[in-house]
Amino acid sequence: MKRPRLNVLARVVPVPLGLLLSGALVWGATDADWSGSTSNSGNTWASGSLGLANDSRVPMFRIEDMRPGDTGSNCIRIKSNADFPTALKLYSNSPNWPSNFQSFVSLKIEVGSGGTFGDCTGFTPNATAFDGTLDQFVALHTDFRTGVGPWKLPGKPPNALSFRFAWRFSPQAPNSSQSVSTDEATFTWEAREHE
Image 1 (cartoon, rainbow, N blue to C red):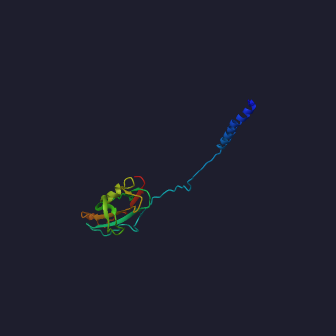
Image 2 (cartoon, rainbow, N blue to C red):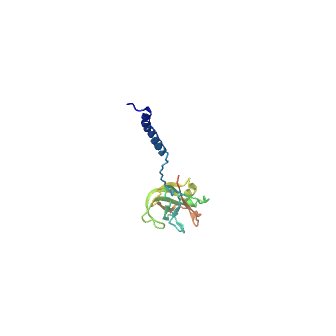
Image 3 (cartoon, one colour):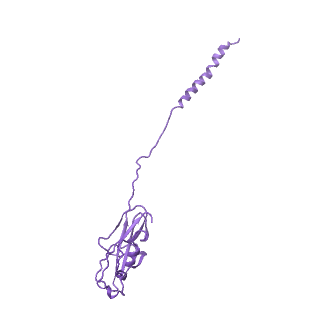
């Protein structure tokens, strides 16, 4: 006995229709906008600083009553507070003296480690920074560009260098050099990030 055509359709049609409806439900579910996130907060930027200090409180030299052949020396320690590498130079911004008396004062400057102001005990030289006369130093090394050096400071402890200044009054100083004095000399250390 044949089943009515309508009855067969009624049993077959619900299957694809159910699939379509379930697909629509799934499709609708994928429209959900799920998300996740992570963050890193508290970011700031602060500039560093570059400062120099030395361990002196008075001039390195206040020499009086020199006689031909007299000598002397002193040490000074230069320390940087920079936390990055810098280049250190030494110069004098003293005026270029008109007299030639300074030419009779020889000056040797060594750079190294150890020693403190007023006491060169333990000073170990690494290099000679200058070896000439006082008037030559004042005339030739007048700013950072023309200064002696550079020496590298690493930006981490000890971040310091010691300098030994040794002078000598020429044994050949003429009679005209009696009762004469130099103008004041200023020795300046300057550090920069770039040479």
